[in-house]
Length: 325
Image (cartoon, rainbow, N blue to C red; front, side, top):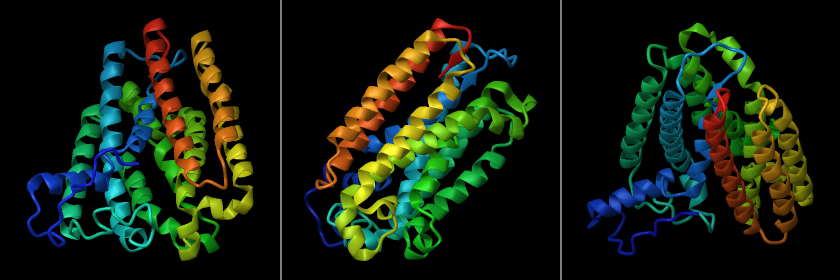
């Protein structure tokens, strides 16, 4: 749900448009004005300082790296949103909630969108280079970039026939930045295979969390999407959408002990379990399948849980020499 208001004066498709209006439209296209972008900030929580692996990285450095990781995730996510809107512009123009998006309504051109996307992408790469130092960023960037490019195709009917839903791709992308944290803290001394092994629990948690949240968010468009045969996970669930959400949430919650096991921290257990379990229960009870708009409320609630978790992990960094950000 956008925070910025659409500029109210339109002069054709592009004529008479001010520079401010262009920037506002580009911001809307990339969702830099959207609370959903805060989702990517949880990727910064992938920066672990493990108790069983030697690291000389200071707490201040970890905070700096977390900030760079968050900036990278937000900028790359914004570039991905721009790409998604360009790919979906014809679909979006026929959906009530998205028909006024700048690309769908013709308020900005494809050239303007691609220029903006290139700027966002290149800036995100720069942030990652600053974060990883001497390490080559492209072994990390290429797979994630490929996922972002393919993501819009997951909504097409052919993907539905293959049982591939866009939430699969989104979940992988949201969890991917956990690898950056390990690579930044431990540097070139840790091979990518070892980084991946250590990130698996948090990655699985983020995969099912984002699957759960995006399914509820997309459910807002269920009526229009079904008419156009847009592929999404709620098509798999049908009338059992609440049951699907409950299953996804349960899997996400069940991974929390594996995420926290390396850390002997009562605070992390209390702050995670004490917030997530009642939070998820409240979300599922308040979700009403007969009111698609309730999916947006659920999604916002999950973002708040994510932000709370980032705060809790940041506080743990100050409470212990074994830290998670």
